[in-house]
Amino acid sequence: MNPTILSGTRSNIALAAAALRRGEIVGMPTETVYGLAADAGNAAALAKVFAAKGRPADHPLIVHVANTATAKTWASVWPETAQKLADAFWPGPMTLIVQRAAHVLDAVTGGQSTVGIRVPAHPLALALLKAFGGAVAAPSANKFGHVSPTTAAHVAAEFSDSNLLILDGGACDIGVESTIIDVSSSRPRVLRPGRIRSDDIEQLLGVRLSSVEPTEAPRVSGSLDSHYAPRTKTLMLVTEALNLFLDAARDAGKRVGLIHYSSQLSTKRVKQRVTLDGNNAQQFEHDIYAKLRMLDDAALDLIVIEAPPTDGHWDAVNDRLRRASFSSR
Image 1 (cartoon, one colour):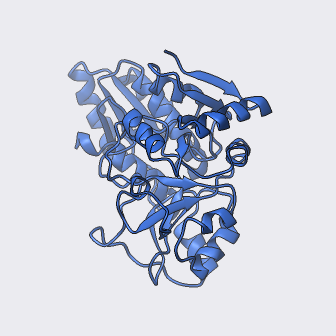
Image 2 (cartoon, helix red, strand yellow; image 1 turned 90 degrees about the vertical axis):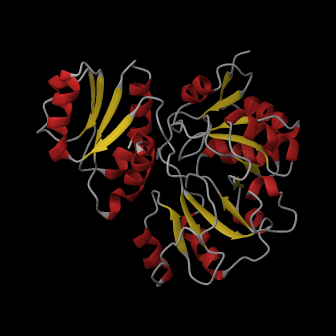
Image 3 (spheres, helix red, strand yellow; image 1 turned 135 degrees about the vertical axis):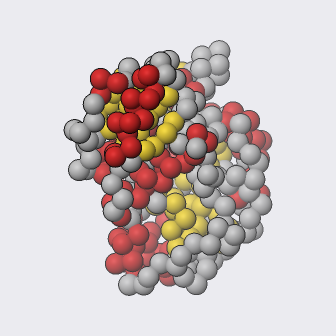
């Protein structure tokens, strides 16, 4: 068995939509990362997603729909706040957490009373949703906890022993997952940072976002301490600590891959290095998963990341890299 990567022609979109209707899973491009799509109303199809990813059954999925009108049918209550956010940011990299409609399967929500919904901005994703005629649940198209894929080739590498159909929409425009906003209670709150920032949301709504208490917040995709992680041991260190650490790693004979942006580092200590733009958070977001995957495939002992800046523009990057390096602490 081998995955099949299909170009985004009308006939291939029809093939992928037919596979979804048969209860199969399909690799689907979005503007954020590639998703592993299945009919959100088909319990057997959803079970295939969990099995393929090795995903815990209580870890909720995000429902992807073609428009706001369809999104509303997946909610029992559609608050005014949800409508304002949808009008401003859909199609786009924003997931809304709302109270679930009665028909929503527990497999989608992880047994919770809420459901996450979004309208993706990628034209091929929208074309597939329209051809399918329904909603799909589409977590990132990778083994659970691994680095999210941003190209069709990444998806094929993750599921190399399958006959998965993958629609090739090119490299993802954004490169990290959607912002998740909980509007299921009286005061909205961000549960996962993404391209749409908290201050963008506060400016639109004219309210301060609520702080998140982990024991009170709904479980959402990407919220585990260790997530988005390479298989190679990964560390994130502040700039001031890196040179000493790299010296010690070299002296210990370690094969080190480095992701950095600072010019004050001596990169002679590393086997392979990647330089990213430390002045452009959006470009950093776009590049980081692909570069982590590249280093993960380079037979290294260790991946070391220079900690990015900490202002609000970098919230999504810092969130993903903290989780990617968590299990190595």
